[in-house]
Image (tube, rainbow, N blue to C red):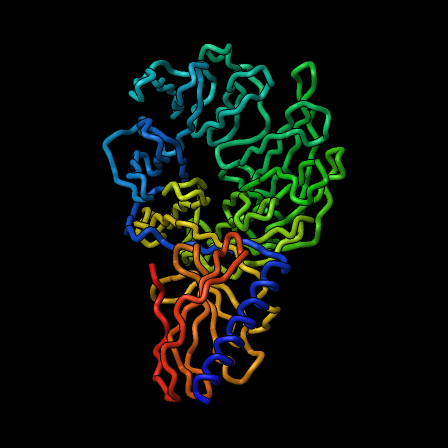
Length: 480
């Protein structure tokens, strides 16, 4: 009798797991994302900007912030070096002389890479303003990188002859050191345009400033159009096709209460507010397909830089139509000034490095040491688990382990009501495990489903007992 009872339970287990796999296979499978800190405790001052680039040519993304180079060990850990490119803290990287190697621009100076990843000062840039920061981009679509030189009050366009020799055009786009420049074909005419986000007029006035759109042309001339957003303090602009209609939409981060905005493009360079507010008090953001569903999401940095008390950063998921949902991930709690994205540990996922800034008004506005946050992403695929309302995704303290918990997923019979589901920290395996089963067959059986394929299940261990008894089952630990 007991043997028949055992066989019946075993058969029911197989049927239930088969049904679960079938539903998972048919459900809309979506990759979820979690970020875990890399474990380093790095504090720095005056880190207003962050760049990720392979500085030493070893194939790893290194970091440059606070006027210093930090080399990556390949596992997402960075270590300070004495390699610096002058005294400026706003450094730009790009191939300036068309030799295929990354060069450096910092405070009116060019440092060329000799091809063996050794950098040497080469020349000063000729300009009528003092460079505070630089933006590197091929502005005139001729195949080489030009420079927008920004001072604390204005900007200048410096054109490249293709060999790293730059000519000051004397032309200004109306920006300055705290403005943000985004590039792309805004009006779909085939030429590079520029969106200029201006937080305010330069000090000491610091009044509201209108953002600008500069439309490029075949004659390599730009035509200005004002794009005023009332009460906005525009700190960051991203041009991206958020709604997948083949034109560039606009994200604007505002360090003010108006909030971060998504504006849709009509294809002719006219932007319309979508009505969405993606948080507020933001200085920086980056876009990437974090959930691997084919559209671009947003990592938005928060905190009222440089005098605020900090705020968590957020990741927003795009539904493919340009409508965003808060992932509920809460990352950090500082004044985040800048962010850079890249695969820091070579696992194929997009990681984030965030730098923070705070000034102390009680100490002559001296820069206070703030954390440098290296967030390593852990992506995995999951379904809605039979649309269980109590399924959730997030970070679980203290280990910050990414997980999916769906109590009652296998709830077709009373003896399986306490089965739960979890994902390993590496995101590769989905576990079904029991927390004690009614009827005397409590067990530690673990069910494996390959998350990225969700095509089969394996009964990990058969029930060994043929007699009725009760086991006190502890929560199953993740198997790494």
